[in-house]
Length: 348
Figure 1 (tube, rainbow, N blue to C red):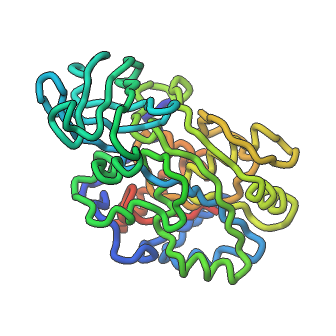
Figure 2: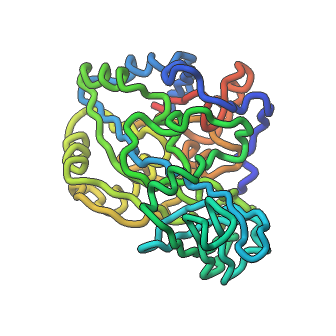
């Protein structure tokens, strides 16, 4: 299967640069995967497609202010770190810039230009594949507080505008810090709207998947099958496992809010099969593309994704490539907003 089969044309002006003033003000394209039918609604209309007993699975990962700007201790040259994954203690996997000049042994200073005055230092320990580095931090104080003080939100490279309110790149239910990017399908929900859905009998099931390198890594292979996914950490509590088991035994739909929730659910499907889901955590590198058999996900709420991306392949696996590309063409014609701060699609 060729990666080029998942390409489409998108005018740059349709890439949303800022979030809308109200979270629930986005448009909603509803795609019926059985017959390819398309409806154009507003996001609050999602309630009309959900029934009592349906379960919304929400990724409650919180985005770290993981982009750090500093200098090299020896030369004072500018340097940048993007934290992707905590390894153990104060060691992290990160992307660096400029990559060729930041090698093992390099010391980076953040919050000050000298190792003795900077509150946060990072020493590069190892070089990895795809421009990755392993760094070890030394700091004075509490690491998370220093990140909040010195770090910036790691907005995707296609967003050129600055973000005035950090919380608009967090879901209202974000709880566990660890992501390098937001699970953006959840950005459309407000607390009152979630309360409204619960009052209708819709159940909310939180899970955690920390978004990592896969979000930033383009597909460089020519064929889909040759692409390798980067592993990401997930966690499912006993309470959430019980909710999923109850949903699987009932008549309601299991609705994944975002591709991260879908990947976590289908990881559980692989792990437990038709047996009850248990509380668990671990690493997943599941790659979902057409031909994949979904075991748990019945419906998916998602945003519009980049051409030739693994996320576009995932939604194509659920709804069919032709249906997805036709829906995307219609969304372009009707000038929907695309990507992280864009409009939503409900695949049912």
